[in-house]
Length: 230
Image (cartoon, rainbow, N blue to C red; front, side, top):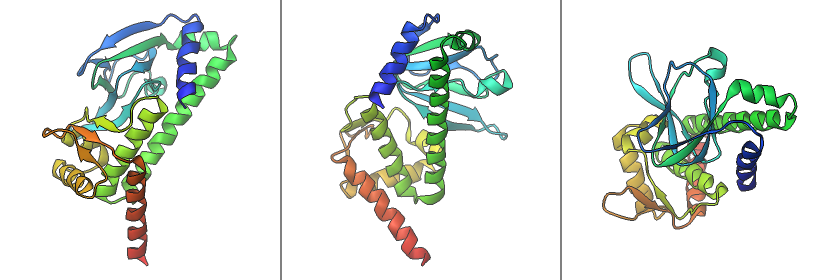
């Protein structure tokens, strides 16, 4: 996966497509819901959330994205973006004109394959998140959230023994379909069982002593749920 991300970034650099590179900080938006769709955006660095607003006016986190991910696919069908994309820390975004990408793909079919692969990976990840919501207990859901984060860091060649939670407990709960209190209790239980550890009193930095312990915890949770149904 790491080579695939770097290959994608290199191919975009070499393609001749005009790339608008932009440095963003926490809270900056890449695009807003309702804006006309003209560009796709590739994340060169940083961590981002995608947010939509529900019918009753509540903000809902519907996606989390790292280096190498693409943003803006939601705008292709409707002709406008249907979500907000917001930076959670310092990062760099590469924006490219969608029509120019399609035009160049005629002579460079590899670009089309790259685009389709990015779409496919995003769909697979979203399906995995839905399965987690449907099949895991609250504590295991938080553990799986951390597991996916660790795996994303590992695929990008970043350290995996420590995670800085750019999301608040409320935002994590929003993403996982849980309350803030449930997320806090789940993290505390995971810490008591030695699956994670907190690096400071603010509990924003989470240490991962052994990524395998997270997988084992999730598997135990699934086994217990299966046994309870028998």
